[in-house]
Length: 459
Image 1 (tube, rainbow, N blue to C red):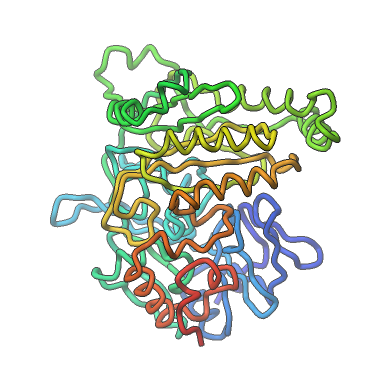
Image 2: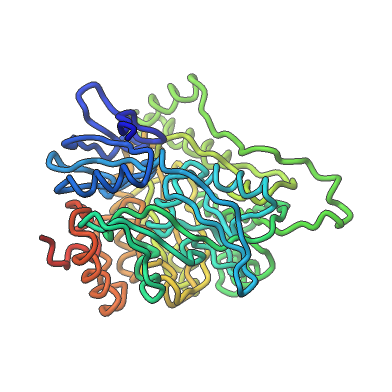
């Protein structure tokens, strides 16, 4: 048997002291041991001989879900990354089996070579497929189910006893968003579709009209996908970036610039030094910090009209560390909540360095702990580059507004309130019971505080 690797991959880093951190350096762990197995068989042996484990992917999660205590084995899945060829099912759908450690970008590229695509994709190509699905990571569309977990039709996992099982179909709604608490997800069967191409467009409009519910719904229904909507509360504008399917036979297909790879958002050395300086200027010296923030907001993710493969749906490979929080609320309340956040930011004298983001999800009854379970939602996102140290009060204000509105937090991002009240009690309890049966080795302190695993009778 091949010895499991001890070198972390993706956004997971290790210091010489054996301390591991996630991609933005906010979450740190000092685990009992770090292992990165190369096969499902190796992973199964690790589970059998370990008392406590925490399974991670590329560590692009931004909360304690990726943390491992000193009595816990930290296991990274990235080497377990095979993807099978798509096949057609009896009902006519196409599906593909993938191991959980493959990155979304690698899986999408491999599918494209075979003429297939995922029905939807998130922004980052770096996250693992297993991590994306376990946390309910999403794209944006009211036309397509845009949480990839909704397209999972089969799943295999290793339970705390070390048994490799096929998840019964009737339990898939609970296990699709597993939160790392139901065992080690090893393989996933996902619905795929014939490959397609996308044309992107972007426009800046006044927030006053754009944030009215009718305007939001009308624009969402007019496009296949939303790369992102962003709201600049200081300028009072909304930037709408949309994506639409493009057929090769359409007249303007050959006239648009061709997109071949992800846009890279790297910062040069001088820019990083300017950030570090401006972020720590006492009392916003002569408005220098806010001036830099305005420059960042206005230059955020410019999108030119272009054509590109569906695998490039997320468009941009963002590399700069940031704090990030997102909550899902009913679409009908999106505009009013954004305006309330803007008023609260003004009250505390805070200017965001990045615009507020919005993604949109069609309701689902297929995935129990998804943010869009039971209703159409807008996912409102606040982020701040890691250098800025004036965001703590804004963080608290943003979360208070969203939590008081009954919002559901993004499972992979920062939040500080247990979301139990935002989900049906029977769903929460059913997940807790399943966690106690299958996943009692895998829960960590964070998941016991913020997920249904905290209500399970952990051994």
